[in-house]
Image (cartoon, rainbow, N blue to C red; front, side):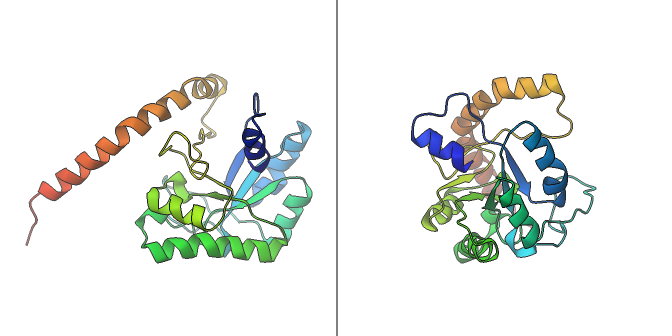
Length: 213
């Protein structure tokens, strides 16, 4: 993502894509990187900085979620030596949009500080846990000096601190993956238009519902 961001800034990104891996499971080093190297690809792995070497005990969107080990600092240094980029993915993989402003800034700033200390290199990118962001989280990431940040959904058409991504899973065969590449960006543009109206409608409905005493 760092190289792609630089290419975009230079107006020279035609034909390029960015490959990202969230959470920094140990299979990124031992399974994904050998495949990436075989095809001469690089990628960015986003790390839950406060849980190095532990397991993925955070809340998951899908259950059951198998427990998987996270990379240690030593293993992340090996990731860097293989030509990959390491970015921050918060301290604890908590949903940032549910936090108070002070907590958001702590998750965003401390994750970068710990990774810089552990790896001895600059950390330029951030990825929002669960791919979810709002204006407060984007502002925090921008204020903390990150060069770019990735989510899943787009808040605005042009915001380097909320870059949308196409999610890929083990359920995506060749045809489904090709379809995603073809239509996902159009879907996200449509979603960016209608989402604010949906959010306001949802909030209005919640306020109008009777409260039980």
